[in-house]
Length: 151
Image 1: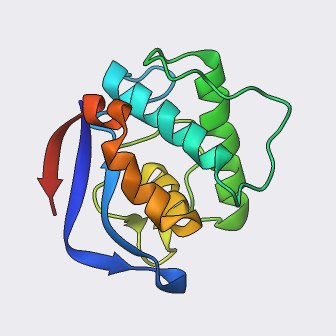
Image 2 (image 1 turned 120 degrees about the horizontal axis):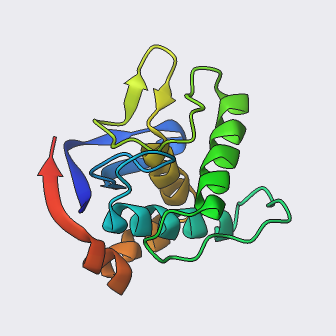
């Protein structure tokens, strides 16, 4: 079951982007992981939103995974590809092909290395704040978010 991770105190990041919450997986998603269908569906949805946002840097000649809830090779490749892109921007980022549940925004505050799922959320919010906030009303989001956690 995917989660809405709500911050008691909104987090203000670079450029004045404020995150009050993020869409979060409840279990790791990736090769050899639990791959709970709602978590996979949320991740596939966020990957699609991330790569179709107005400021997307351009994508390889690879189709986006379908939002099916089934962890497949295409989803695995996209996770690894985007983690690799993130690693080039921040050497403290983890490149393991796995999307772990965020426990806050950063797993390494000193290196400013964020959880991959949190970075997707931040990038979407930064690109178009109103579009990000409107995701809460998307039927898919409503169907997969089963729990709200306040931290």
